[in-house]
Figure 1 (cartoon, rainbow, N blue to C red):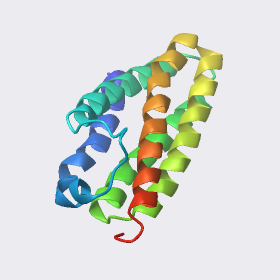
Figure 2 (figure 1 turned 180 degrees about the vertical axis):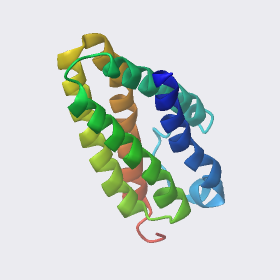
Figure 3 (figure 1 turned 180 degrees about the horizontal axis):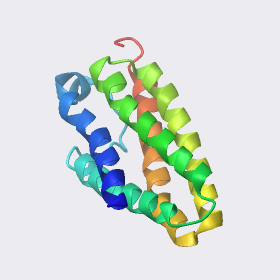
Figure 4 (figure 1 turned 120 degrees about the horizontal axis):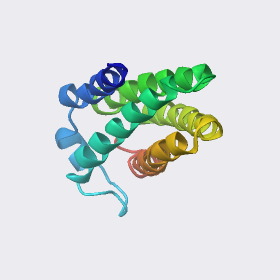
Length: 149
């Protein structure tokens, strides 16, 4: 049952993509050459949300994991916020700030989880890798589109 609570939180974060789609505005932006193809995003996020839910569940089984679980909650809130700010409000700078905070929280979460349980830390590691790519992409979009934003 606990796993499904974490999965529900991830589904809520994912649902923001249903309401705030990339659309023509995103397609028209000058993006860097390392931008993944559009089909990669839903595959990556589905995988990452499943891993996040699994890691969250595993953390509930580990004594002393309250701080890591608090970071888990913070990261899912920031994750949920990014999509409407970037795609909905089209505030690329504000979304970069959110993503920088999200990255810091996620890194702290992985480091702390790794200290409690290596497997859980490794489950969370791909999330930080993806967030690093997302931050580089967000920053490049900000830099390459200053005149049109």
